[in-house]
Image (cartoon, rainbow, N blue to C red):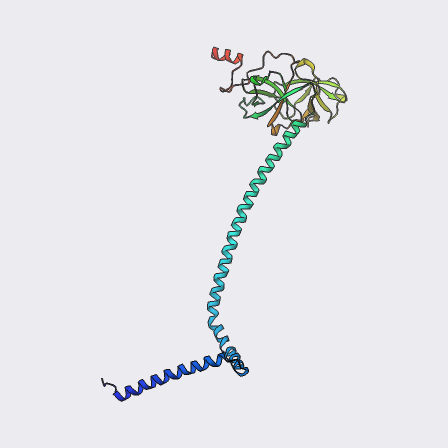
Length: 302
């Protein structure tokens, strides 16, 4: 391979130096000219910018697109996070609404109970309905008041709308309420406005039957049914319900009490009632104090 001539090398080096100097000089002149405040120079600058800038925009288009994609992604991520936060807040609001509705219903039942018009001579004990531990053949509920609260067998129990039943079995801290719908429930009643006397007998349906009515021709559907006070078990004038006809034409009582939502009950103190000697073996929970007849049954192994 032939080596370059020293003269040629000197010529190339001189040309490089000259080109470098010329480029530096042109850049310096361009810089100084660019900085000059002259109309012609300003016009030149505008023409150069108008010529070069569109080309730079075309070159920068991919970069600008990537930047916009990144911004859109950040916006989408922000919207997604906001959407998730709104979903959580909506779910929480639904939970709050459900809790508020439950509290509103409970408050309404308590107000009904508080607004219940009773004989001023009657006092009451408020109670809460507990889980029912009775037999499937018994229509009854358990409440959280008992002998230590002064509860006695035979006392009437009411919700905020009407008569529910009577105490039939008392433990130390709990008592059993026999509902009007139970087959063992028979109460004397007066039908208003006719004043007809009858017996309201439970048959394990939501609407007890009307038995031993004096004159059925004087009774109409919608007539008010109240306790008569006969027999000395229930105080008089306690609302039981309204007269209704079943499909067979039999007279029944549409009970005023809300049996679907028995939560809070009033047990009416009625010391003038007839003494109940045999309340029935209705309290069977081992955690409760057994009644005397239950104790004898257990002792006999029955």
